[in-house]
Length: 556
Image (cartoon, rainbow, N blue to C red):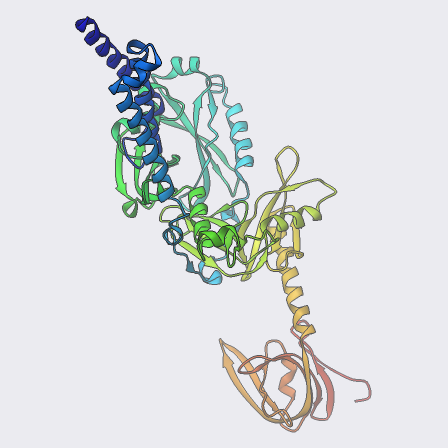
């Protein structure tokens, strides 16, 4: 009986190990106490072992109560569950609000300096959905591949050779197609230039053998798990280096608060998609060509911790004094050979305006905050859609641009088929100012004219007038342009700046002439908007740059 009992226990252990191995091979938990999947794996193995032991050795309730092994096993399961629960609580923002808020520290940015005006051919005109349409259309034209492969839905946004590009691999069309093509691997990937809409299928000399479309040991997550059993990987992205070689960018999670809290990225593994060769880097040593080490969702989450936990966790739930959060959506901006995540910042009260916006670097997590109040993105989208409501076009989530120093939303307007038909520019601070164009150039031309006109109208509405005799007059040169500086009797505390390039007729005026000046108050000299009065023996009006001439009045 003892031999049978011993043999039964050995068989139980054997079956448990076999099932645990299968579970591990399928679910791929990291062997790391910071991984919730690891704790789930431990609990599953313990429960499985207790089940098999109880099924073979225990028949009645009394035997369960008297079995020391079951008591120890159940106690161990409860203990592991308690550790997991307590660890989760102690790792949460409930008790670590200050630590969570410091996970990311935004710097105040200068919009005009940081976000330079970009050329037309560098503006990403498409969103992911439009890129997917182009990718599928390109694949449909490849007769030799379309029956065997499909296009992956990844479409990673990267900055490739200074261009905004989305790149995505092909995948096997079915398990049968995988079986017949696995030896050669996936033969190509697709690139889509987001500015020119040029779509290219790039064929490889050697096929991609490690991807999300593979099975068994060439499945990319399993390949990584066996190479790095303790690493907890975040979302993988598909990128190409400067030579066009495909890589999987594999960010490794780092937990900074307790067992499971305060996630950032501590390392990044680059896996050659063709050979499976891996290189492991600290996040600060990540190669410059890599664009996405930090997933966009993680960056948004980190900024929301910073904005909502400003006065503690309870305030973020109840009073919400001073709490800010990102808006619902984000887009990408290519700057300095990096990809930055853009999103607006608004109050948690859910109003339809932004207090500013943030840019977050996907490689380094550097974050810049810009305090520019204005319309929330969805309000701008609705404003643009209102201009073409008769056509039923829908706006994409905006892209942030610098147009003539003005923070501007740029949107594409798509029809029901998902095709881009028109473009729109919406002023962030005055979202009722919308320009629509069939091309980007046409749209920008209308927009520049519109903001120039509204700026001139605003100056006119704020203009003041001063009438008097010129008591002093001096001349100076600023940036190569001549300016006349006037002082009028009874206005000795004001200096009027008259640019010669805008008011050519000012040369006919001298000390002693009577003049009327429309101006806006600025320091150190008032900005002159219009001039009229007596120039010598003639009374006339000095026109602006449009005519640049002196017109004498009748009877002068």
